Image (cartoon, rainbow, N blue to C red; front, side, top):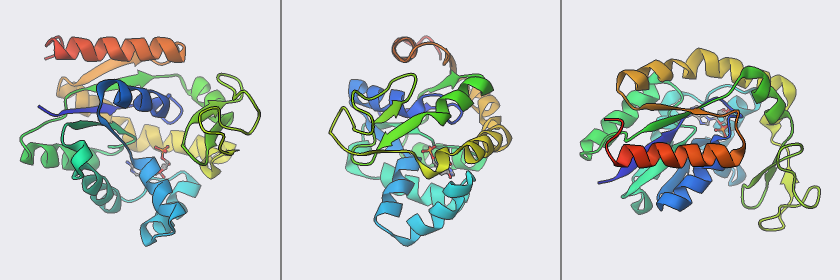
Length: 223
Ligand code: AMP
């Protein structure tokens, strides 16, 4: 049975960091829509250029384009056993499309851990975020600095600040989250899939809480 887990939460909640860890731990594919857009952008494809105009403004890329891109990714063989979805879905229409695609394969969304964080914490976290240009590892000026400034601990790659990590864009991304993405909380809650995780804890404690939530799900605790 494929396990399809959606890591849900606002931008800056720590979804990316935790999704990488969970995918490794559970041996599932990591499907991050933002990474797919950035990859398309670095390859200078049409999709990448289209996405850039939205990403730079902190807006969502239109649903049709986003859904098609993620569905193509989920059809790849490494997703056959399931995936950790990170950054997708971000709208009700995306969630409905995902449910439909999974149900056509006889699957469903297994669980939605929701990493809950206050707005002040989000802004503080997003402001100091640095990403590795080479492997995508994430560091933070205050909460998890690299050993050497500007250099990735994992692969030695160059660290950069994402164009959409500027203060104005961050603020807008958070507004967009509350307007367009947060209605999904009720959507998943109605389906009994939502498990709240306190995202104000340390990275390690969030990690443990996520593993607990998933273990509970496996033993049938949230059905
Ligand atoms: P992220 O890396 O998840 O923070 O995503 C970076 C940017 O990519 C977002 O601010 C959006 O512009 C775009 N993006 C990523 N995922 C989605 C999605 N599911 N729907 C629409 N736009 C998305």
